Picture 1 (cartoon, rainbow, N blue to C red):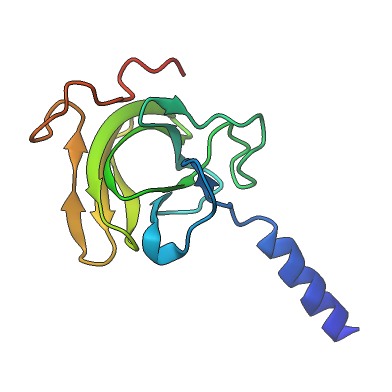
Picture 2 (picture 1 turned 180 degrees about the vertical axis):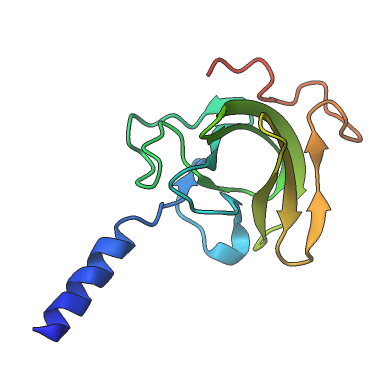
Length: 157
């Protein structure tokens, strides 16, 4: 009986872990050839969704992410290189949208970090977990910007 309860608990908990959303074309590649961008905290009362990658919506229907019932995933798998992402912070006091760029490296994981500032503001930054350094920034401030880059600034949420 105890074994059954432990197994059932494990299965129920694993069903709540969000699956990263693959946002590149072609066959699945190994982790060392791709990049993971993810929310740094899995909470029931706040989170960061990735609404757009390189000008394309990540929307996949209501309830995509089991933790927050969002239309957008909390994590995405992309190919290495410069990436543009749109985000939506959501919490008890409302939501905020952001647009960021980052230069990614194969096999690395990047976390969307946040800090609440007062009651109605949130500071968001991106951290490379391999180095612990802050990477990228707000779209528009990137070096060597490609004029044809597909950003998420004009994205319709």
